[in-house]
Length: 259
Ligand SMILES: O=C(O)CCC(=O)C(=O)O
Image (cartoon, rainbow, N blue to C red; front, top):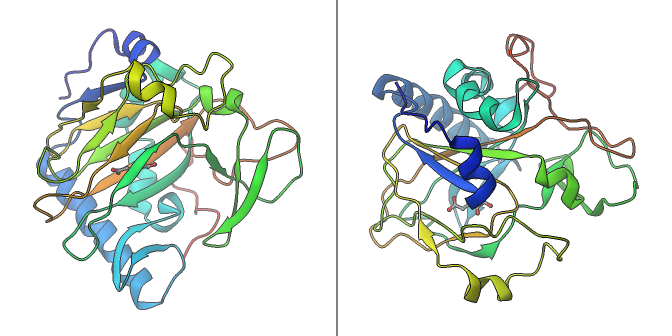
């Protein structure tokens, strides 16, 4: 049973993140690894654009909710709802799933950034949405800060993450924009001390997408597998629609884009 802090919502509000150990047990982690590995291999074989590549190596996958039924079920499972509902309330739904790994063949790093992009059903030129692109056939856009402020990301770790394998680093409190430009990074570097999110296999890091985060390449690359799930509570403004929207009870329905 995960030891969910009683003040989870307070911590997310104050720091923009929280680490929760033991969300999934060993067999649950093993089942997810098998399911995602299968989907990743299949995407690689078919040269599917959902596969994230570095050279010849695949290190991630988009549209995880649509491609991996086990992840769709996970997104509505009690273990995940117990993390999401204290922060977003009972009406929260999953909107996007991604998979990341760091391997010897794809040992990547990311500079400090915020997650500003959402996936939509189709492009709508609505106020506040910008830089429309298509990733793996799915329209994506930069979303208005008001939308991102209402979201929560749950990063489920399928391997332990620590100093050796390029764990997530965060700047506590940097999710509070207070009207500032979300692409602004430099002033925050001096204002907040980075925290490394060490977490065991089966644990989760919860974070607001607006929290500044980064990660270094692994010093000892092996695996550092993460299922990244994003949740929201409200429809998008301006006639834009979430690409996916998974609520408890929805997981048995086929995904929008089943493969
Ligand atoms: O998994 C990581 O280390 C970072 C991933 C990331 O920055 C992101 O999801 O935007």
